[in-house]
Image 1 (cartoon, rainbow, N blue to C red):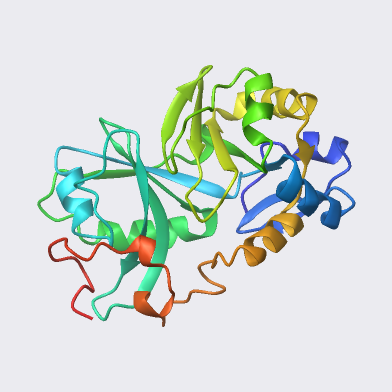
Image 2: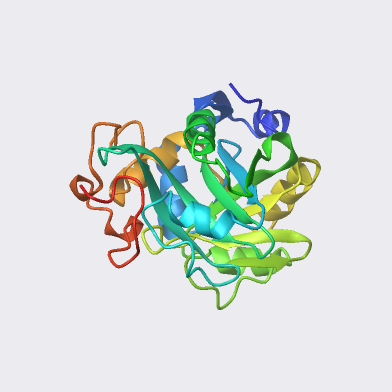
Length: 260
């Protein structure tokens, strides 16, 4: 289980700690229903240390990854992302992830508990390709915000978030800001160095964001019908059984599991 970067700060704020998606994090700050309400009507801030990032580099990275996943990597504009499945040859889902075009590399984002299996699966198909995959591990962490007042809270904290489209990446105030997909209204993520996390957390709560734990995140996820790999989507499922058409590109060339 991965250690939470913000563990001491979350405990000081009254959090009940526990495990979520393979990482130690805050389960609740005492009232999960109130935390959910902040996500629905105001602005909640939460630890995303259970998310993980993998960098794909090398001159063949775009062509190679385009042939590995269900969505289009080749057509991704700079600083934009999309949602993908990784399949086996029988079309069963081995994992899910977001892929972002960061210019000199591709950034893959998934749950911490999926990293080992996805790396093992993908590396098997690097044969003559000039591609390297690196788990960014302890060099990057993330803080999330959600709610209709999130943009105002970010602006008050000095982070420009206005005008962003779903799955856009923007550098702001030395941080990497990502707007969530259409399926996650009001959702933003901030990727940053672990040493910056505590000060940013204090700045965001000072700007009006209410701390929330993973229990509220789970309730919000279910309310919005967002499936979780390993729970709602499993390795026996086919993509067309999930209803997640945003993960599929129907006009791209061959990729593993496409025939099904």
